[in-house]
Every structure is written in C-alpha cells, then in structure tokens.
Length: 275
Image (cartoon, rainbow, N blue to C red; front, side, top):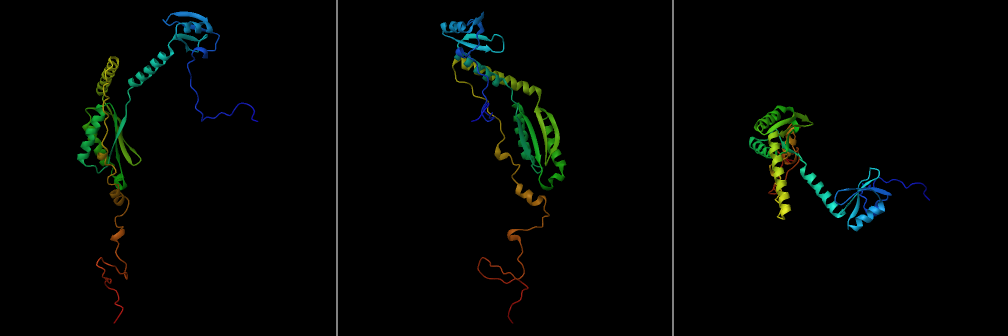
C-alpha cells in the first residue's frame, strides 16, 4: 500500500484559476458590491448569497486576494460572455507583423527578380516584413558578390516603401537581408485595421453581415523557383565534370553490344578468332 502523497504527474493538465460562484465561496465573510455598482460593505457569505438569490442573480468572487475577498452580485452568464468579448477584442487589436521570406538563387534571372520585387512590395504595403534569402549550391558559394548585386538591386527598388532592418549577412550557405515597412505605411495599415474593426462592430450592432476580412497576400508557389534546377547544380557543383554514368560509358574492350536490330557487332580492333 502506497504511503504519503500521490506522485506528481507533470503530464496531467494543471487546472488554472477558476472563478468561485455562489456556494463555491467558502470564506465566512465577503465585501459585497451590489448589482447597481454600489458598495454594500462586509457581509456574512450566506447573507450575501441570499441577497443575490432574491434578485435572481449570482454572487461572484471578483477579487480573491483581498481580505476579505471582494464579491459582486451579477448575472454570471452575462459576465462570462462579456469577458469573452473583451478577450476577442484584445486579440483583434493586436498588431501582428509577419516575416515573409522570398528565396532567390544566384542564377535567378532579371524577370523573376522583378516579379519577386513586386510581391515584396505587396507584403510591405500590407504591413509585413520581408526577408530575402539567396541560397548557394556547389561552387556558387565562391562568388558571393553575385548575391550582393541581387540584394543591392532589390533594396534600391524597394527603398521608397521600406527600411533595412538587418544588413545582408551570411547564414551557412545563404545570404539574407530583412527589410521592414516605413513608419508611414505602418500608420496607414493601422488606420485601415481600425476602420475595418469599426465597420465590423457597427455591422454586429445592427445585425448586418460582417464585412469580409482583407485577403492575405502570399507568393504563388509556382513562382518560387529556388529548387527548380537542383539536379543541374549537383552535377556541376563539386564534381570535376568528367564523370559519366549510364549510357554515356564507353564499352570495354572485348565486350559485344547488341543493337536494337538484333545484329551482333564485334568491337573494332578485336581478334577474329579464325583464320
């Protein structure tokens, strides 16, 4: 038979703080706030509970850290609903800034770079940061100046809407730079979000359909060509270029090959085998 306290299991979900209501309030006396917001003073808990029940309301503990705890007479269901609305409103008011990553290669042509610059401009105008990453493969790492040229061209093309947050730097076999929207753009995005939230609240109050959320801006997958020619890079990256495989290998001396027409051809220079 096990003795002492049961063993603590960290895998079990720990219960957070729960609001005590009505008979769950076990202290002998509480400081009571009336349904109209007026202070009723310190009362016995059973007396405050009887007062709340006579009004068809609940006795809710709103501040358990004081002595005695503070309780309020109110409709607990309505109270939970309002608290949930406040939390949702706080989440909507948070300004979340994402970092959108755009990948390049040293051999990316000018047309693709121009397309990625347009996509980065849309990201910046939506209030997001952008990270450009130039990935090297094989011997491309020996020519980092090509990546510097690409990033300098991109920074110059976006200097009217962005500020450099992190200068170009090497990370393993990649060079990256991070740019952020200018303050004026962030103020414009904040004003748009505030107007959208105001329209949403007005529509909810009037019972109309809520306005649609603004569409997210993403880079099309078919345009992200950072891995489109990995096989070519592997062949000309670290090897010497004189290695052959498959059908490119020359036949060894003395070995016959069978052509498609079924006729056996002896290799040139071989012995005939008969006089």
